[in-house]
Length: 402
Image (cartoon, rainbow, N blue to C red; front, side, top):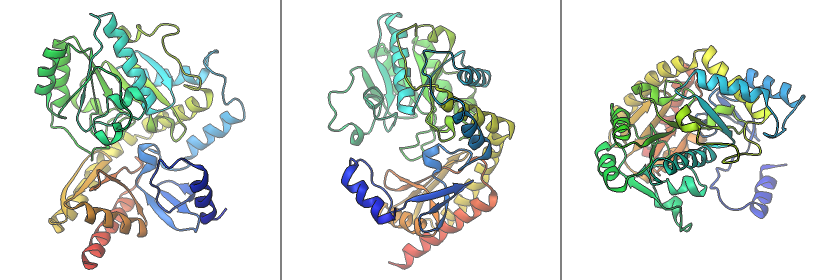
């Protein structure tokens, strides 16, 4: 099909839930994508933090092909070999003792909420959960109830009751609300991605954990975007050496194949008993084989350490751009290879975004003024330099256009 035919069919048959770029991708390799017309783009969206090993990584591709020729799906009516292997890898490299597999980030949050409430029911009958303003946890009803911005929630009332919101990076607000509402849990992102790559000050997670322990609350971390090496640690909570009680995981876990997980400590996980939760597709042979290949490669090739090193270099280069264009760029920030460039004006940001795409760089424009930049963990300094050059060129083009 031509691009026009694809767009015509899309306009005729698909629900209008996405604002799409006028691009259709034909193929990908490493950090790069090619569209239907053969134009090449540096993909620093990574499928919204999914393709942490880039496109068509041979170890993931070979794992998928090998598994697809043997067995794609059986459901959890049977024991699944790859699921057992993946659970061992995740437990061995995290705080957790137990894993539940699902298919997506929003499902992982749903499972985390259910597990916290099941625990709370047996610990004083508590069910309230504290979330944070600006948080994005997903679009299903439980996850949406924990999501802060009204633009995602509008039109879907009534949502689940028992969710309370406090400012992000304000542990005192959590302590104050906990004393009034007697909640069972706190849920937050170690870095707020959808809200513009908001990085809390050092010690934030430590203080929140202390508050949770004092008030007998669970700490749920949404590591859907920050997990699997994105911030320069396999899990972002490792930066502060804090152990959560539950972690929601997805996105990069499956290397592009839908795979999510709920990780929990034994004392919490035991509240999920037979029949209390489930998933038809969760942890199926294909998804867990792809995920095993993904996580093993991240660990074996030291890509977490590489993300930390390249993230420092990338942020240094972005700070240089900020210094050169102080009127146009309000801030450049990042943790590992999760970076944000915040523009002073949303119209200028939009125009720079369009120019960057035209010049062969793909990033995510979030909150209307922030470039959310999510390179593969195995990107190179040369590719980072190309991205910085395109951003500078795009800024100059917009300035010169008036």
